[in-house]
Structure formats: structure tokens, C-alpha cells
Amino acid sequence: TGNMASNRRVYLTRRPGEDKPPSDDCFGIENCDIEDIGNGHVKVKALYLSVDPYMRCRMNEDSGVEYVKSWNIGGTITSQGIGEVLESNSNKFKKGDVIISESLDTEWKDIFTLNESQGRLLELPPGTSPSWALGALGMPGLSAALGLIKKAEIKGGETMVVSGAAGAVGNVAGQLAKSMGVKRVIGICGTDEKCNLLKTIGFDDVINYKTANVADVLNEICSGQVDIYFDNVGGSVSDAVIGEMVKGGRVVLCGQISAYNQTGEYPPPLPTSTKEKLSSLEIKRERFLVLDYMEDFEKTLGLLAQKVLQGEIIVKETTITGLENAGLAFVSMMKGGNIGKMIVKCQK
Ligand code: NDP
Image (cartoon, rainbow, N blue to C red; front, side, top):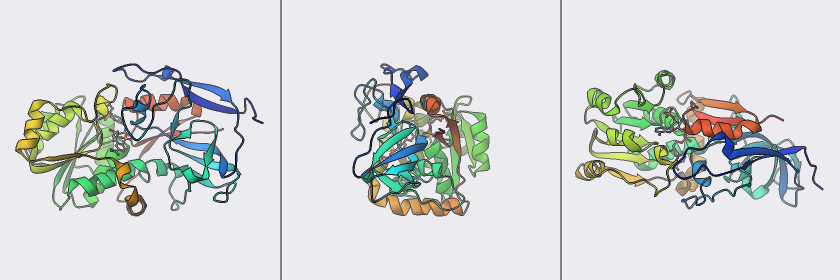
């Protein structure tokens, strides 16, 4: 039988509504049972939960994407998570193991249950935090690395622009690109603090898109010379960058966060002038989805771990503490409140 009031869960109270940003009151928290575990399941104390931009589409009635379902109103919020096994009915895990859920469906509870088939033992190199497995050594790091490996066609000596540059994917993409032979990396992000940080981790130039005119600055510092554009944001920032690209350039179409609060097709339609630029200069711009490359995950995580241990990738994260603040962490990330990966640290 369950043990009421010894557990809590975060649930969806309401949808943000068409074309609106999410707000804190979309998320509620309440006491709930600790579920009994059946065969092949484990009871896990949450340590870290991931908040990611794709979760915005799960708040809509129709997620609009094939790889995740939307949340029901009243339903428990889910994402990727890391926790410590409290009790095991599985041969795969024992009490005390720290495990990560491989699916995006870990329930936001102090104590959640997991099917052994959805968990993986976390074995991280010494000197690293388990939370990094949700960031530079997890899905965002993989997105940066595989986006570059599969779509950027790096030959060496290129100029690359990254948008969303101070975020989980963007900062790793910039750092990794340099270690893969890109000569000059220009980062675009939303605050001066982020710009300064990017300089300390090897970005050559930085642009605050909220205070500067991106097109003017790019035109001044690398007029028409952008070979690769790692796009995390879309919208007018991306139109400006594409306007400065070389013939035969490559856009890594990783994300379009500037459009995630709007309902509509993905990727969102481009203005005619940008479409014309892409076609007249034969710039490649193919949709990239990290989940299409699962067979490459293990090898690529090994590469990322090696780069982190060698100091070629400096790991950045922003931590918000407490399951009760997890919704707030998501809302804050969507507005730019994070440097590096936004992490919810649970403590109970
Ligand atoms: P981030 O850590 O980058 O957090 C989101 C950031 O987006 C914010 O910090 C904010 O930074 C920026 N942002 C928010 N609104 C806007 C806007 N209107 N215009 C420009 N920037 C904005 O998140 P992730 O690193 O996890 O994800 C980055 C991108 O990568 C997202 O688009 C995501 O969907 C995509 N992604 C794609 C994957 C794939 O398989 N294709 C896998 C994982 C992520 P700032 O202060 O700079 O505005």
C-alpha cells in the first residue's frame, strides 16, 4: 500500500495557451503516494531533473512532434532524470546505484519508479558531477557533437556562428567546433554576462542579440564569410546570420526556440529573402534530430567525456534547487535564465 504524504509530484495545472510563453502557474505541486514496485522495477530518489526546450511542445494539447506526447492537464510532468535506487525489484540495479532514465518520461516526483529497461547505471569519470549526464555528457552534448559531425562538414579553418551560444547545446557546440578544427567561433546570446563567459571558454567573438544589431555586427566582423551556422534559435537572428554566409555553407538546424511559444509547423517558415539566399548560395540546411543517431550515442559520449577530462570542453550549468521549483526552472530557461545546462537539483 502507498504511503501518502511522503512523496510529492509536479503536475500540469493548465496549458500556456496559443502563442503564449509558459508561466509558473502552469505547474502545481501536491503530495502523493510512493508507488509499490512490481517485478523488474526500481524505486528511485530523484537527484537531478532535466528541463529542456522541447518540453514546451508537451504543454500544448497536441505536441506537434513525433518523438514525445503532450502532457494531460493534471498529469505528472516528465523529463529525463537521475536518481539513487532506494529499493530494487530488478536484477539490473541494486540499492544505492545512481541511475539515469534513458527515456524522456521520468516522472517529476521526490520518489519515482522506473522500469529497469528504461534505466542505465551512471558510470562517470572521477571529478565529474552526475548532473553532467543531463548536459555536456548527455543529450545536449550529444546534440552539439552529432550536429557538428553529421551536418557541419568541418574540413578545418572555417568560421562558425552559434546562436543560443551560452545554452546547454550552444556552448558545447562552440567549444567542440574549435577542437574539431573550426578556426573562428562567433557566439550569439542574450546577455552581456553570457557574452563575457563565452569569451572565457574560447569563443573568439560574441554578440548580444538583445542590445546589438546582429546583421550589422556580423557584416562588420566577418562580412559574407560564415561557413557554418549552428542554429539553436531561428527567427530574425538566423535570418541575419544566413545573410552573411558563404556559397556552399552549412546550417546545422538544431532548434528554433524563438518560435516554440507559437503553434505552427516545425521548422517554422522562413522569410522569402532568407529562402532565396539559401538557394542561390546552395547552402545546406537539413533538419537535425539527435534521436536519429542513437547508434552513435555511446561512442560520442566517450568522445565528449574525453574532451571534458582534457579540458577542451569546460562544463557550465545553472542549478535551481528543489522539486517545488522545477516548473520555475523550466520557465526561467525558456526566458534565458540559464548559463549552460539548466538543472533541477532535488533534495529531500
Ligand atoms: P538552452 O540551454 O540553450 O536554453 C534555452 C536558451 O534559449 C535560453 O537560455 C535563451 O538564451 C535562448 N532563447 C530563449 N528564447 C529565445 C529567443 N526568442 N531568441 C533567441 N534565443 C532565445 O537550451 P538547450 O541547449 O537545451 O537547447 C537549445 C536548442 O537546441 C533548442 O532550440 C532546442 O530545441 C534544441 N535542441 C535540439 C535537439 C535536436 O535533436 N535537434 C536536441 C536538444 C536541443 P538567451 O539568453 O541567449 O536568449
